Length: 261
Image (cartoon, rainbow, N blue to C red; front, side):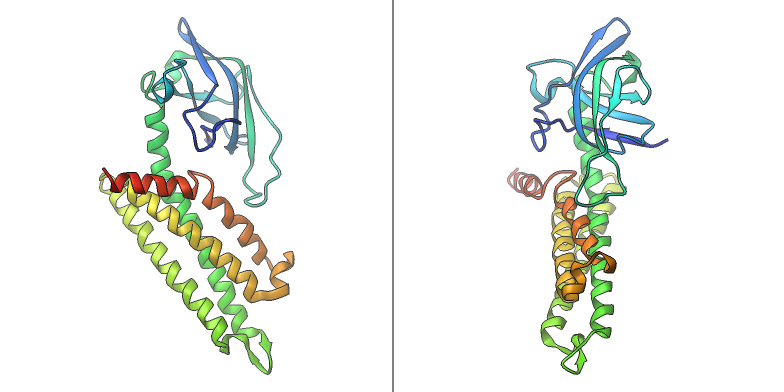
C-alpha cells in the first residue's frame, strides 16, 4: 500500500511542533479535526501517517502519531497543488472534520509522535539527499554530452576552459555528495546515530543539485531554457530538495547544535 506522511500545517512548516490539528479521545476512538498541508501522495495514498496534538499547551510533548486509512469518514483531500517541480508527485492538503479512528491506530503512545516524526525525517533526509544526487548526476551527464557536441567559434564548447571548469566543479561536488550520503546510510544500516551525518548529506547534496542544474542550463545556453531539451526540469526539480524534509537552514541548525553538544 502507498502511504503519505502528514506533519506540516498551513501555519507550521519548519516549526513543526506549532500544530493545531487535534485528536480528542472518546472511549475507544479518537476524533480528529484540523488541516494538514504539503502532503506528498496525499491524493493517491492508501494510508496516512498523521501527526497531531492529543494534548494542547504541551508543545512537542503533546504530539501523537496515528495511522489513518483513506476513505475514513471525515477525511477529505484538497486539490493537487500546482508546483514548480516534481510535478509527477501529487501534493495536497488533507482535511479532518470529526474524523473518527480506532484508538488502536495510535503509533506508540500519546506524546511520542514528535519523536516518531523526527526519526522518520532523519532517515528520509538520506533519501532526499540521494534524490538530489541523482539530479546532480543527470545535470552533469547532460552537460558533458552537450559540451562534446555543441560547436562555437569552430570548436566544441568543451574545449573552452570556462566550460571545463564548470564540469570539473560539478563532478567533484557530485562525488563529494555521494560520499556523504554513503556515510550516513552506512551509519543508519549499522544502527548507529546518524543525525548530523544525514543532515550534512542532505544539506550538501541539495546544494550540489541546485548548482549543477543551474550550471547545466547555463552550459546549454538558450536551448537550456527551452522545455524540449529537458534540462530546465532538472533545475525546477532540484529546488525542492533544499526545502522539504527540513530546509537547508534547518539542516545547518541541526548540524550546529550537534557540534555544540
